[in-house]
Image (cartoon, rainbow, N blue to C red; front, side, top):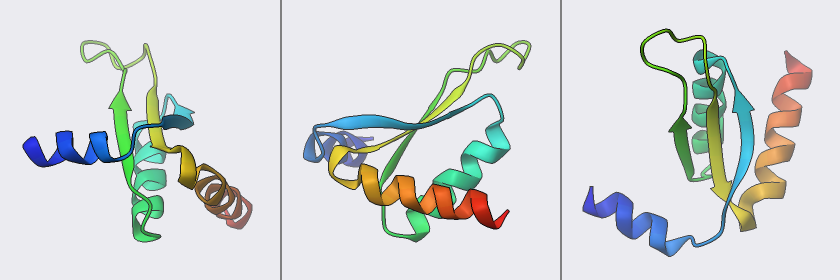
Length: 79
């Protein structure tokens, strides 16, 4: 946990890159970005009781936003 806190302090400006109600799709995006060396923060706001309320967010640092957005755009075109 300490390592994650240091990591979050390192990158101060986190922005929401991706939002989905589909956890599987969101984890695909997380894996894709991390395979390109982009650090991410997953935020699961999906209700744990019913799984049909809320959404899943993927945050990236502001400096990586444009690169990450283009990676997601290419991924969606291919697929």
